[in-house]
Image (cartoon, rainbow, N blue to C red; front, side, top):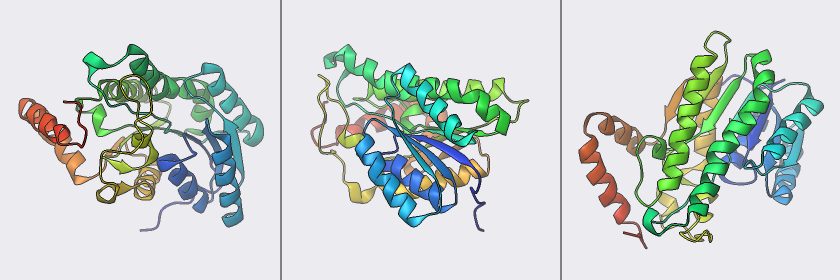
Length: 273
């Protein structure tokens, strides 16, 4: 079955310079959507902009945005509405991970992860919401299986995703009579930049991912499923068999899943425990 078109739709994507965000931009452009792309790396955004406009007859706006800064998020939405006059879909994709034992982790690392993953979603959604309500549009949060099951060695990351999901669920219920669509999308481990830029216990970047990229879902696949679910106005999608099984087992056998999760994460190369 062919997916619906995004012609005449305006889509805001945060964290669009790499990984899932970049793949989302290309997927939306291929379906005719006009884009407002946000990231801290404006050079990478402009490279993506040139690639998209060379391939597809769509408009692309790029805005340097640090989603942990409230003013940046407000400016992003203002520039988008000034350029396009509306917003149909907001995809809160910007995110950062961390990998360290909580006992050894500086609090500034937890704060940075929360500021980007949780507060970035809150800020962008706050400023975009009036425009989304006018369009009966969609708010998408790119979360994680870590928003369902706490992952050892990633306390800050799990906390940020649990918080994001609680916020979006409450937002959905608040606006249930205004036809606002809210999607919580939970990829499993994905071959993207987020793990390579994960923070260590002192806030330095981890560098190379401890996991094998070739065994993970590709960012392009994740983007396809997210856009398909958005157009179908689904509530939640959980990707990968491992992710679905984890969520299901955790409902009924949480103690067993604690042990299984610990043993699984312990096998990572360079595991902190």
